[in-house]
Length: 298
Length: 136
Image 1 (tube, rainbow over the protein chains, first blue to last red):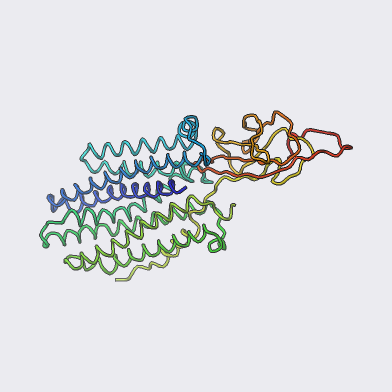
Image 2 (spheres, chains in turn brown, yellow; image 1 turned 120 degrees about the horizontal axis):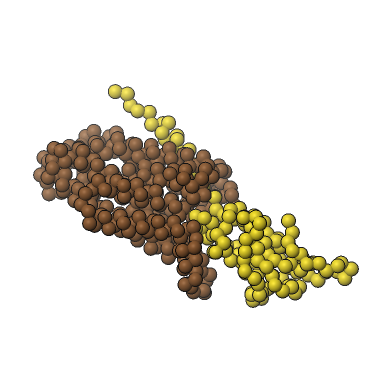
């Protein structure tokens, strides 16, 4: 189970990173390139590097996921057999879905390597977000597979637009503008962050709404929140999301309006980094949660 | 300029988090023989009923004696109920303790396994020996 947990977490990081890269490149193309084509080109170079890293994470996640899934069938002391491998990969619903995910990840990695055009990241990110839920609980959504997968995909896209794009703001916005004179760099950072903020709000709203609709299909027992390991993990996730959103709100309301100078840029970098770290831990808690049985249904 | 009211957003987020993430994992809901059952007849098959349709190719049932040695058995097959599977037992079981060990996987790939014991005891002399197919 540990391998599957790590695989899931890496997969979430990959998909969210890809969604973030797709979103950030749109911000750069519309808000930076028209006025600053040189700076825009530098930032887009970083976007391509981040997209490659995200695609690599997706591929790595799938390899680990397959190994973890095969491992979960083998009893202690038993060896993996070719028959079991074939059954899991080629004759199970999970295996068929894994193949779709592997195709999407492989194509994404290839295209990110070979094609310079960053708008291509948008369909690639949407495909990755749609393929991701196929090996998860979305396929057993009480409302049917299409709705289940769509809601899970929207949930991931919303989260990716929020946290993934924030990663790109730091990695590409800050990282890509290193070396520029301060008089150019900090107004550029302010432009990027001001363009990101409403996009992030839309991402949070999408993630929350999709999550709410998903949850309506399940039965919950409130008392289980504090009496079961699952419930306590969910409370932890709630606390992490509140912390992440709280830092985001602080950045949005207090730090962003003051951007334009080296001090304010540094201040935002620190708080945004903290937001990202907590966001990554939040994704780890989510990976743990989706592997646990619901206490009300045991 | 009016500050946006974030309280409704945070409340919705809290509601989402309180109810999101609950998952409907496949589980065993019924079996023949039942967990801990003492049978006076001779079972001809093991039947398991699950909460969701199990993946047939990856569903396994093993019948073990009390000393953990395997009992010769048939192949796991579906029944007329898509939520249940059966394991035919080609030979009559001798009285003693047994363990049913099972493993299956749901559509989302989650592997679920479990085991439970049951006993077969000699029928009283006045009771006619009948073979149990399965009990509803």
